[in-house]
Image 1 (cartoon, rainbow, N blue to C red):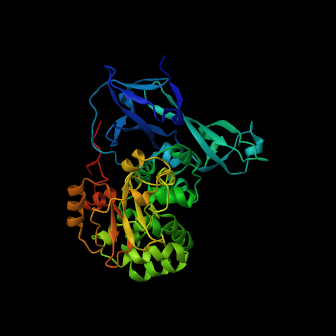
Image 2 (image 1 turned 135 degrees about the vertical axis):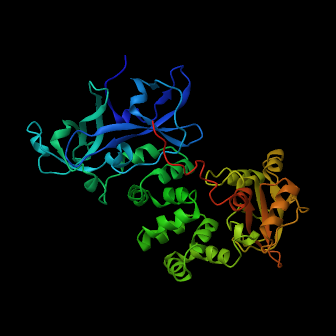
Length: 426
């Protein structure tokens, strides 16, 4: 049976079907119009994510049924233009949920005069077929480590949900972070880009350094710089320490020289030194593309130990595809570079064998000043996804992986899978 009253958090992720049962996408948010005159907010429509990750707007009047696990439309024809938020509209999950509000309800005297947070919005269909916000679920304060109780109150009993008050800084991000749990960093970055600037900053501040670093590395350069500018200087330096050195160098390379140097000075010297070395090279050279932390081993390392190193979940598949063997020291710039061993070769050898006995010494290394075009030809010629960068004294400086090459070969806006068209009408 189709529902006429639902909570928006339960709509998130539901599949959207056309009248013939064809899948259109999944609900990612609900668009609500909150008015200053305290009238019941109207639901304008749904933000639906297509399989291509483009987000479109579907008017709520196109919805014929909301059922457990699915939402059905009265037409399979929808506008495919990218969703653009209009003046006066708010996103229920991205902007309203987690807002601080106050409740004046005689049945809940403990909540009177204290800040609580919106946990969910209840919407229901009126006789006119319009959908209106009728209920607000709020969370009380956590007590003695217990989960915060949730209370459902009438919309008219809640104050603090005007557009001005919602747009104030300091909004909670509990619900948003729960949505991001278990998601790949690239997918979180994509969702982060869809949020209003205020919410992006609030989420960034709430994420721990490691998680934020993974996400920031998946953002376009200009958006990395913008997000960094909203962080306190100490937090920005901590973020750079948590990023891969090559990504940190790329980001610092986008900043004014004085600002970049100030951040480098705040970083731990062990973290800043490899970044400084990378900044000495052109960003479109092998030295500028490389990471200074590939898998580096000595000749006496066993195959079993080498395989254990490449199992590190923090390694990208490209960096895990090859190990590099050097004379000590193994920190870059290393001792004399001896050769490389591909993971396929490691898998064919007995675990007790030493990597020094199975070296590939025929693969020519990359010179740090080699331009991007030559690096690309190198990967294509040898069918590689990772290659060593060695200086004139035969010291291993790092390794270039194919994902770094692709980042520089693709257009700057390659992460934008949607057009910038305005949202179409119903």
